[in-house]
Length: 236
Ligand SMILES: *C/C=C(C)/C=C/C=C(C)/C=C/C1=C(C)CCCC1(C)C
Image (cartoon, rainbow, N blue to C red; front, side, top):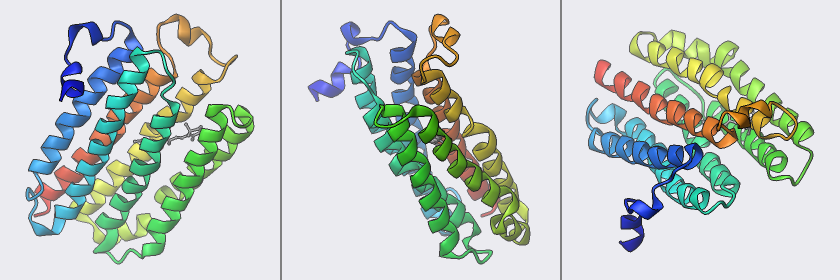
């Protein structure tokens, strides 16, 4: 409890942009989770699991943001929490794709391929970002996995299934596809900003890699969930 109250204590209110975005991010993820969990039945039984997964994504993020915010005000690295968060939430986003295409006949293999690729993308990204390996080499491997994910969603079998489903499912799939192409592209930009010697001018603006990641998370995790929510209420 004391820890929880600490969140609101004045002495702990962050006074730099980076910590501030962790603070706001924690709140936004908590609020979004409350919204999704209270809306489980908004689209009837058939969309319950999808909305539940949306809530789990923002809830897992809320917990990690709480810790990252703490680490950030203390000047500690948040990289480990960041990647634990992603390794849990990004596969859940892959599950969302499967869930909405399931009724159009999606195979589990689609889900497992996306999960496998996103795991490779994140593990190699962590190796590059944490300094365990060369940032450029591992970042490139991560980027290639990302491109394959984009390819599968834009040009692979998933698109045909969405076409077959049509209606609100197709609209939602198309929106989520854009999230992956544009929203997820925010992350490699953050990574490059975090790599010494690349885009150092950004630091001078008071921005850094963490701010970019925080913006990315807000757009992608909450946005993704809202697309699913919208699908559920449109296609009852
Ligand atoms: C909720 C969190 C999400 C949607 C996180 C997504 C993260 C990525 C798409 C990260 C991608 C990266 C690359 C494509 C290359 C550089 C390393 C990463 C891990 C930042």
